Image (cartoon, rainbow, N blue to C red; front, side, top):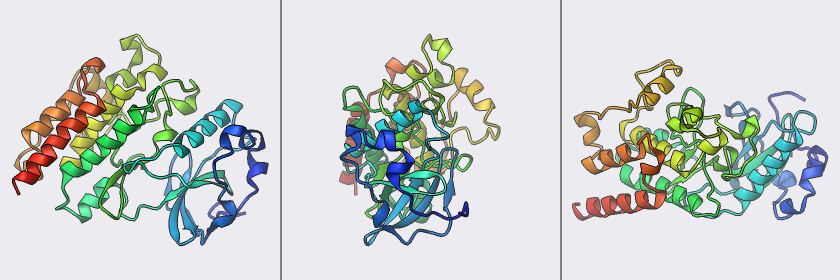
Length: 320
């Protein structure tokens, strides 16, 4: 089989000892129903690739996971089950829907979700520069608030608008212009996740909170650094990204210097008039700074962020 082609595989033969667990009984196996598979992947990452196909008349994204019986530990497989079942139980307008799973070669398991034609939020803004950025960031905050409302909270763990360097794009935009979060289950589903390498800190330091970059300085374990508060820090960097069209610390081309600057309590500087005209008000800048605070207990909650952004959106609408 060519590495540039997908072909259906028997799902129960791929990961039988986890797929037959009761927790997966409600997850749909869509393997026979996925048609018109793309001849090659459209995006690649360290843990899998993105392909497209059709589920009925709906174009879908297939995120293949490089997890097989032969190459993965039982811990990794159990973590994947937790990810799949967790995503399947979530439902919110600002979260990417989960349709089910499929088994396709050469890497095996694929997670099936709707294809977002607008792509990530920065791609969307590049094509639609007049879009209201305050509404988009409120969408993101509402998605985070929903995740954090669970007990224990569901943590995204790797929130980024778009990053050319590692091709992470997990703030997507629907055809309606509404933003939604993706990949939240693939980073860290809850605060009580496995401590395997597959479940911790695979993010980009431009978006990572200081406690994630250097947990020992905070007296915590690496996995304990991935929290709702670290999500809020990353959200603040997404705010910067969405309003400026620049990745955080864009002046530092070498990623190795970013953690040094963050741990020295440096943060992105406020842009000039051009960005102000896009809607970067004093209130938005103050919110960014609150999200970036080095002391994680001083950062606002996702609920607080939603309330502040809602007031801002209402205020903007009243001035039109």
